[in-house]
Image (cartoon, rainbow over all chains, first blue to last red):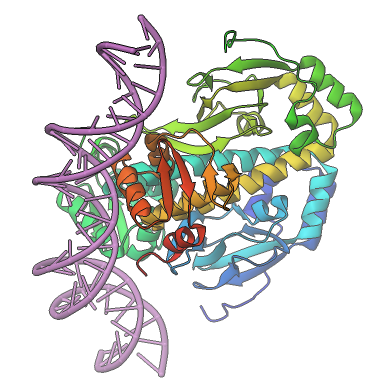
Length: 240
Length: 240
DNA sequence: CGTGAAAAATGATCAATATCATATTTTACA
DNA sequence: TGTAAAATATGATATTGATCATTTTTCACG
């Protein structure tokens, strides 16, 4: 707890290297990555990159959690996605050759690896199979984003909150004793509101509503899903 | 007007070949495309592909206009984009190797070219520069979709309608005499509602509101933008 | 620990928009 | 060109969710 800031930590066992995107790169390229990569610890609230700036590299989350968001013209934050260890950030802008269209801020402190743009583009260039994988990933994400758009456009806030809780449980759920699942991510009510696109007070009210219905329980910030099926019902069929 | 259905028309001068995506393919590949391509006339209301089905090729719009949309679980349509001559449809699913995640239906009759999947993938494989261009396109579209999400999540229906009218004017505006612009696309009020994610009645009311404010004029289905700046003001600053 | 600030919770009120009902206009086409 | 069906228009009402105000709780930090 004493030395938290900007310590370089070894990236030799970065989760991103084994899993996901980089998994089947040739040895040579993995070595190149290891050489050029840097890892820095970020504290809660620190920002990896800002919307509107030029991307100079690719981020890979070693530990900790990050929110990726846009700020609307009225100053309201809209969270586009959450990133966890093993996830990469910033490749959309690198591939589209644009500036960042979103910002990324740490919500749980951790170490972030950084691969310089030139190194990443080089490896993309040299490995058609890897490039195909990246393109496939981006195309998949476009599909997810289209689905999110429909959800926000057509579902009620209550349904969206229920759906978000299900999603969070699946992604960040810790197996508890009595198959109750604790959502293990430090999201404030405001963050939650900025994910589903509503007011903070509305989230608070709906959460205590769900609590009354025994769908969830609240222990401070952390939410425990008591009745996943009940939540799914809220998400899919509420009011119809 | 007599022989409208399923007539093969020559694709030698398909707008998609000169402009946009295919513009700098080598001669050889352009010839391959011409050989394998087919063009078929579609009438209003006919569907190019359905959500959930397997893509077997790439569509290119020669003439006419198409809406691309998803149907939510409650049966409501959400339009994701509109496509005009020169635009391509279906590449997201081909690149992500997934089923279509949306449907595409003709809103103004015209001729649609169809490039078999194998032909398209072949050319992608053989031309890294072309593949990079496609990937760049998909990454760019992901950025656009993220922006749309924020708009739908945070702007009022009135603002979204104003913004949509501006967009339509820029994309489908016909230069009129006294710099007034007629939006030249056959969208019903319902279509408009399904673009911005609201009820048809709300669109109708807001349109007549804009008409009262002399921002637009209505001639049947077609909308003429009288005061683009006024609309921009509605889109950006309404009520703030 | 204690304290001040931030977050969460709760209430009251208001505005935006959906929904339902019905009338009017337009359009397709027999 | 007449007619039914679809689209547009308008009104009345209900509902959701935003906003503002205030209290209570939690938490970080000296």
